[in-house]
Amino acid sequence: MMSGGRGLLLALLFLLLFLLPEAFKILILSFIGGSHYLMMDEISHVLHNRGHEVRMLLQAGVLMIPGFKYERPNTYQITTWSASQDYISDYEKWFADNMEDFLKGREDLSHYLDFMNNLAYQCRVILNESKMLNSLKDEKFDITVIDGFNPCSFLVSEKLGLPFVAVFTGTFANGLRVGIPSPLSYVPVFHSHLTDHMDFWDRVKNCLMSLVSTIVENQVQAIFENVIKDYFPAGSRPVLPELYLKAELWIYNTDFSFEFARPLLPNTVYIGGLLAKPAKPLSQELEDFIAKSGEDGFIIVTFGSMLSSIPLLEVLQEMNTAFAHLPQGVIWRCQHSKWQKELKLASNVKIADWLPQNDLLGHPMARLLVTHGGLNSLMEAIYHGVPVVGIPLFGDQYDNMVRVEARKMGIALRIDQLKADKFTCTMKQVIEDKRYKSAVMFLSTIHHSHPLPPDQRLARWIEHVLQTRGGAHLQPSAFQQPWYQQHSLDVLLFLSGSVLGVTYICVKLIRTAVFRIHSSRKQKQT
Image (cartoon, rainbow, N blue to C red):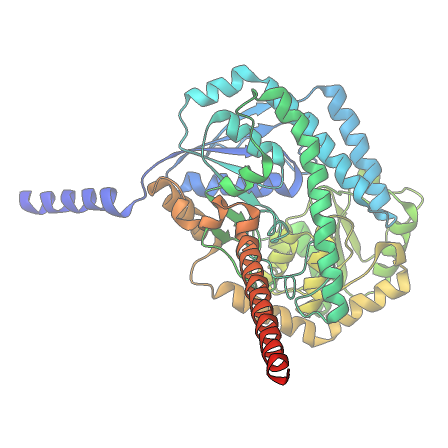
């Protein structure tokens, strides 16, 4: 018995020492609300469940998820900071005004740059919190996991003096910026609305869009350069393009069941579908509503975490009328308190302040997702095999819907051309034409058959970087080369010069030889 007990104890020690991951202290930076927060929250849970000590530095007051019941998690620690209440109120009004513009089909560069200016202001607030930052610095974290969309995350990580892993909550939109090979002949630039199959004029457009993208990125850098000058001492001021290349890993919230195939670097990991889970049972109230539609099933309607209701009566009316002409039941995320009182809700529609979207998509009677085209929603639709009708409003949603149509898993509609008849016909087409369902089920098979699920990919790659004391072995030496060396312009200049030099010498030699031969002949003739 004694020897058996010792054997069991040794086996347990072996498991603890060699099979279980080493525990590390990890700091998560989450400064943007909505889907960005939901992604960073899930990452925090995954890493905590792997046995790591996780703390989130969270900007409170700007979660922008109406109806969402935010509860302080008991699995990881949170340190909060916040801008003033006056600023938060102004920010929320600015955001609401922008949403009205988007619902009218008005999205332009000024909205994006205004957003970056707001992030820069918020960055000044957090960098002013020197006491809190010094306290975090004293805790000796091993690494930070940051939101790679927000330039401020890089600056805070640099201020703390910690290595970092950058998480980009969309597709590979910033590939050119972070050194990922992005051949313009088949890798569409962000906001180009192109697929990976481009004709000549598409490639011309893609090249021009890459130039526009560079100009826009320079404008964003200029906004944050002022922040850097104010909060970093001269001589040790970081430069954003260098910080982007400094990440130990770049983690992207996408998947090649959805994204176009393209080259990646060893330090690039994709975890699309991290928020998608096996469906949990629905409430009895929802089940009773679904049962009313029988075999026709039901439709889920949601415009993401940030847009909880449609403030424009004309858009709301067109959508409500379209739903009324469908045999399916419609479960629509729309706040009761903001429903237009003069508009009678269609009899087959149920509205709710918040929806268990993942669980609804996993229900066997789910027939369609009507969405804004957010990546988390689309990955959940792929996970559960539900086709979509997308109405993109801003940001990456337009490019996401280009991929939806290219994969034949749904149809996109423009918000400024949304009419009840067309909307009804489009939804019926996607539900009744089985090719859409077949296409999304095939994508679901691709997604589920990946050798490792997203949470394991995320945790194991971060642990790999921690265990190897950084990701330098995953980065190409090009990151240390000046731009002209990366593109071999010095080599091309040398070879061009050599060819021209050799050509010049050959021409001179030939001319000299011809001249001498000609002179020799003249002398013989005389």
